[in-house]
Length: 247
Image (tube, rainbow, N blue to C red; front, side, top):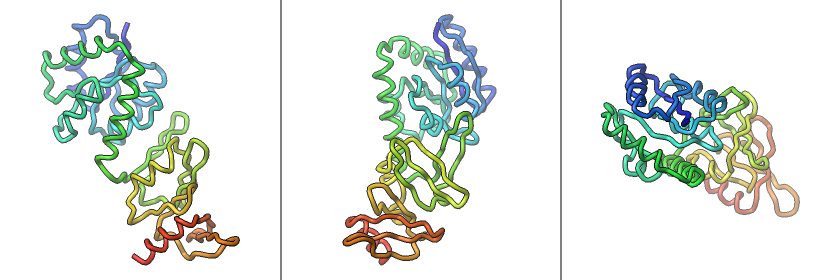
């Protein structure tokens, strides 16, 4: 039996998918979800073999939901929007269905999934696809952090600085800190370089949070931020920060 989730904020869209799925007795829909928060909990609980995922939903998008998952299940996207690079979806997801979804098109997508024999290879493709989407949007405007069953949305505009912490990045705001499983390099590439600069292999700071730069040790420097935090600055980081401040 194939366990599936339907994730869509539109009841009519969910009901149409449920009707189409009756042609596939090997698929069991274990949960219908109205939004990404509910879906994240359901995926952890049911560990589905397949998800039917809308993109534009309240609270968090379909892309952001996938970002929260360490090992996202195979996904068939269902959306009313053409602008999400259909060709890319066809290459890196099982399929991309444009609403209104015809039964014939749905059947083709599910048959494609059933023919998929290498799930682990698919998951790697899905991760690659998510990264390509992030890259195509160029700059992120918020970060989603998952702690247990809770999901926190951090607007990038609230971030003061970021610090590497083993396999995580610690994100600091005026409200406190949060851990995100990611790399500092990811944030370096996806935060606006006009607002953030990587000053050290372990730190990225928001430029407008910098009060002053001070000498530290023989050849080193540190920056003092508005909240009085002291952050180490490497030689290359010092050059980048000076250039950013002067610009």
